[in-house]
Image: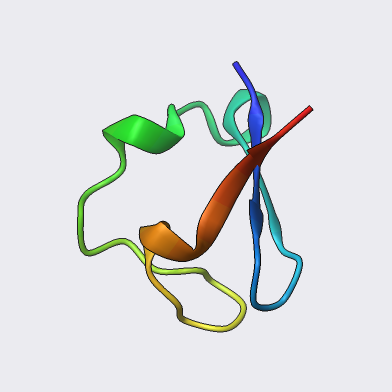
Length: 45
């Protein structure tokens, strides 16, 4: 599993900590910090 970073605010979505792959999140999922969509996240690591 990996980590995804919000390019707007820097929030890190950690698949291991959350227990869900980023790709498996619903299409309408948004950043819990700033509210942008999944398209604003980039895979890191």
